[in-house]
Length: 452
Image (cartoon, rainbow, N blue to C red; front, side, top):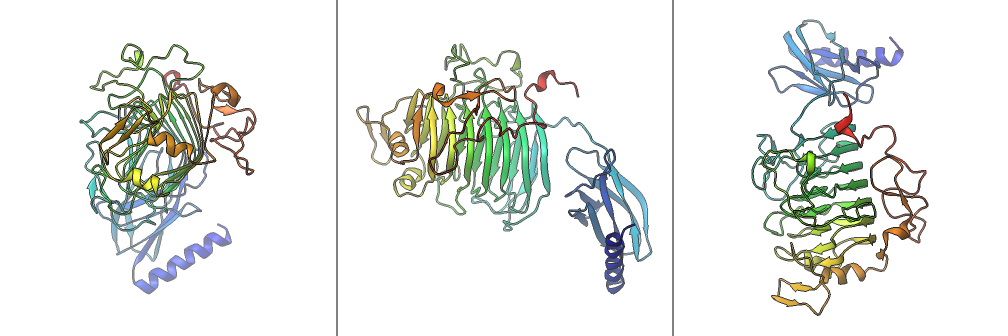
């Protein structure tokens, strides 16, 4: 036992003496590597008493004298319970060594108590009875790193689908990075409120949207890759980004105002998908059709911002979508926010789009559609196109001009061999160049043929 460990235990003993209680303490580690697990949950069974391990994998819980069962759990590991722990001394040391577990899950949902904008508390989408929402934007729901979620999601009910990873009111104290969602049966990632920051996210061949934000999500998300299967799109019309303030577009706070930066979106209309047709004859899902009530549809936009959302995007590359951007004014004031400079959309590069903009959901025409006045003018380009082009740092290119390659065996060209410069020393997209391969060592782009 080293000096740090002795000091830690001594401080716990002194705390217990002063409080007239017993301290149950110890570490939670990986049984195979012996490495401490940061952010593991340790709880007294049958109570709300518990703790989360610190950066050294340690925890401590103050209890009254008695006999307890204690359970330690951590994402990706089998939970472990130790029973008949007698708390009679000042300090009881109970260590846990957890075994890695491969789990079959309908989805992964993280629910917490940060703010949302439609109700203080609400049941999470998709059927689980878990409630989320509160007032603590700095809430800590633990650490989620280097996680793959494969073949999750389910159409529980119309507009109440289970996603790959659902984050309900998750606070900024939570750590989320290096997460891959593959073949989700609805959205790959969806945020309902909350303020959590996320990095290094991969949405691979999902059914509906790649990144969906709702109900006041205000976090910062950086380094994201989305790659679509050209034969899989949802009946609702799949977008890569879909963003609402809330379902009715009301100006409730906090606003959905998340900022996504350094993002690469690879759609269905790429140079490798020359046979693509945005129709039911082509979009069949093939052998990946789950036969569970899921319905197929068409692809729509790289980004659809609607219903009062103030979502922002910067240094984003989008390739091969029927529509580049929809600033949708059917509900709420998103169009007004764009007109008043309250939407951050800079350093965005569109390549290989059928049209740059549309003003209406499911309208595949680049002409003006003004919900506020009721004016539809086929002789004027869409406001969405006008807004995109009004920002000097945005640009339009061809896919061939980008010099993209496929370093990780994704099945589509996604990474530039040399950087796509923003003209200010930075770069556009999720990857600077061919040497910037943050996918290495943890992603898997062939899960259907992987033996676990």
